[in-house]
Amino acid sequence: MSTARAKIGDVVLAETDVWETVEGNVYFPPSAIKDKSSFVGTDTTTFCPWKGHAQYYTIKLGDKDVQDAAWYYPEPYEKALNIKDHVAFYKTKVQVTVE
Image (cartoon, rainbow, N blue to C red; front, side, top):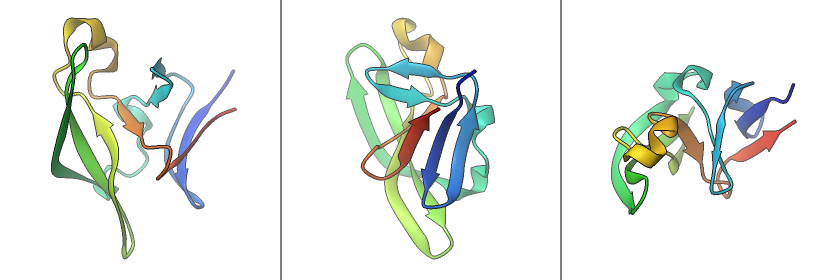
């Protein structure tokens, strides 16, 4: 069985054996997030015509903030209900692997 993992350096942000893949991005279920207190909501939003409005998190690791490194769809459109509240990460900011 494969495991999806999101890390910054040696810090594991999320890890799971069950996830969704959409448009090449791994969407981690909320239960996969290791330390929810490190995820701080921002005012950033984006819009996808078939998924809806995404909201963003800055990830806080000690004195380091990784701005808008993750996003999620709190109220996705019908075609994207499988990723409701799942968290995806920018691959340029977070290492995401499936092993």
